[in-house]
Image (cartoon, rainbow, N blue to C red; front, side, top):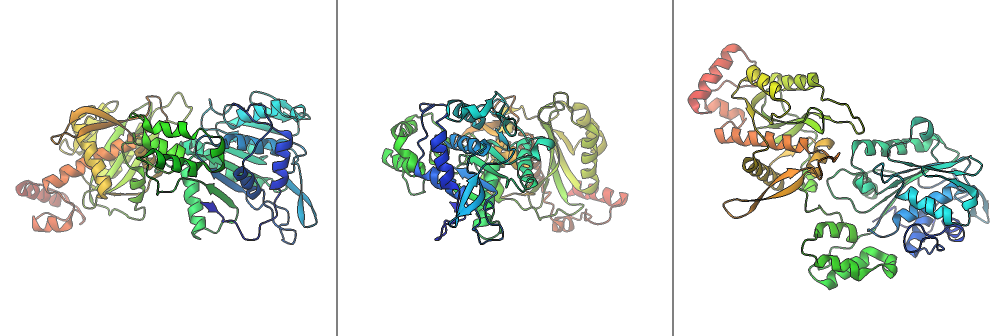
Length: 556
């Protein structure tokens, strides 16, 4: 997938000069070729050519960069991070030909950037100095241009101090961000936390601030897991819409290489052919047989292997729900009427992780997020704002006809008891999620509803992320058909990837199943045939009493 497609008449580009400068002055970074002269494959040369295309000399924007945002998606082991580091080194050097400074015989002439600022952003603090920045540091230390830089652990500066590259795990601050001339985002398939998505938005917003430096950014990634809401997934969807003509954006360059769908992955021959196709020119120096051998391990996660080595967008097998299917069920324009019969699910912690309320319309199965309160990243002392939770819960009972609220009570026992006293014990149910068997059956029912398309949802991004984050924990328990049951958990106890919204949605769905089983469909015609007062009509104490009497008599 290449956006935009290669034109019959090539654009003028500084790419050839940039490639020549990299080969002449830089070397390979960490790994088997550490310190050796650059050997660049033809695909990377072509990518650099495309990324450094400029407007022709007869254009009103002559010499300026064609693309402000570039994204490259290649399989694991493609030296993508090294490519990003090479480009960062060129962007940082005083004399590298990275901006058009003139024309000669109709071809652009390149020169350096004045006072560059280059943030290289990774997905964690630990990785910020190990990925692109770590590669850049080693490359410059061993290169012919090492004397031009003051190379530190957290920043690399020009020797005269007028330009630097820094390692970050979040967005640059306002002062430095305004100076950005080139920004690098590494492994964006892992960028699905709010702080990282915000960092990405800030990076893009910073690009127009220094018009003379013609700032731009480069995103490097492997194929994202669908439905996780990562920056890589968002960028790919954006590129698809540009390719389809739905978005007119001439400033994006996107490249993605993957194995096509026709390979038989049940045979070594099919796997080998798929890996070769996904590899492209790097197949010449890759351990293809070693990659194929990984499919022989009976404990291997084949979905993971397919994603990282074939660069296909496939759901990881350890994920509890099909996040891609979830995304297809979004119905953000649907609005639930006031007074509708609904169910609620409540789950969460007071001081860690997050607390969530999810509602489900009984008649349609439409779900939406009532409220979610997530522990902010990096904040040590934090507590869910109780008043906001109370207000959100009270508003639901005032606005809608709540048939049942399923609550997981730990950390919220007092509040759950209070809600039961206020709204009725028959409507506020303590539904403990630590009961293995009931929880497993509830999750299976919810998963089946997603697969069958029995529900829709409001498209809330936090809910989609929590659905995608939930991992499947297989149990020794089996159902009456001998099929193993499972529950959900975070990938690790201290993971910042929350799942509380997914649990709250499941509890809300379980309450809806109970409502349907009792005959409470939420359909207005049911109220008429059973002699009930329409809950959408103007309410009164008399109507409520009549409803209660009729409901008991009808078995609702």
